[in-house]
Length: 379
Image 1 (tube, helix red, strand yellow):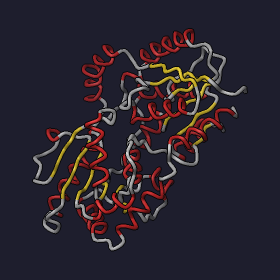
Image 2: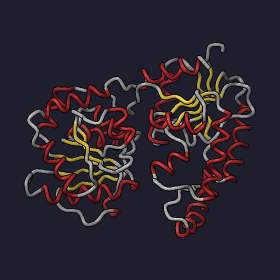
Image 3: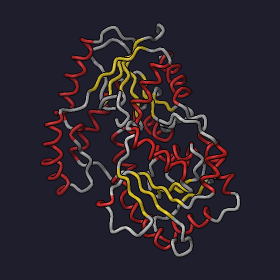
Image 4: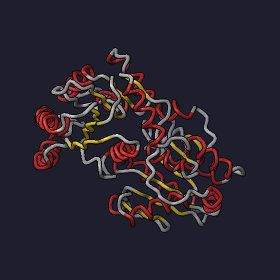
């Protein structure tokens, strides 16, 4: 195909905002612009009024009848139709493009003759079967079938994770489902990253750091229990929780700070976020199946050893044995306590910090987007 100049980027949310889907649409689009591409940002998020009604009424009823279901409004047929109308309108407005890039697997542009590229992490079926570890409910199967049709129509599908790409390639029998050989760190930090200064702060720190939303609530609770026990051995120990508010947790012991959600796009929140990341002794998220990959590799980028569960995608990328932290094999107090003590008492802590950074130092958006565009150019 001809050299790509203009890209229509379809996002569920505003891609100019950092807080849209783990910062990814923002970094992807701004990096594309920095590399010289013309980007038409197209927001295809669902109707807020209908979505609010769905979340407050229908989803609550479904939650009582079908435990742990994830049939959010953006998975419904109504949203499916609504979104394709938005895509049709956007296609009429932005005709002078070379490629349609969707930061989702749920939609494509059937109204355009230009290639469709889908970019995300994993499909809806994987989210239910692998991440939720159950079979889909009958109404979730409807959404799976709609997404299957979209993926079958796409010219190129890119996953952030190799394991997800391999599973989808087999499931859909499509060779154009790929993963680039390196992932990417979502860093919004404009100061110099001074290795010596950062490692010195970490060596003198006794701060445990947890980053995660409410879906990681049980891990935060477990970590608080372990922290209370460890405080007897390490009186200077502190615990910082980002992403969950104090009111959402049991009564907290002394030395625990909860910030709730911190928006990197807000200067004050940004300063707090990176101050805590830089001063943390250890990053911890022991959640089984999936343990906050994005925040983990960002912590590693800032020289922070990590304790996470050995979930499939992380092990696939970094190996079964890691030299920048530990795997918490069992989700219980004794296992997590053992892991934390092991790291805190390590003689080679400084080397662990360096190892963490070295494993992800090349995970930059500039590098990732260059590889991405080579793949798209070869469609």
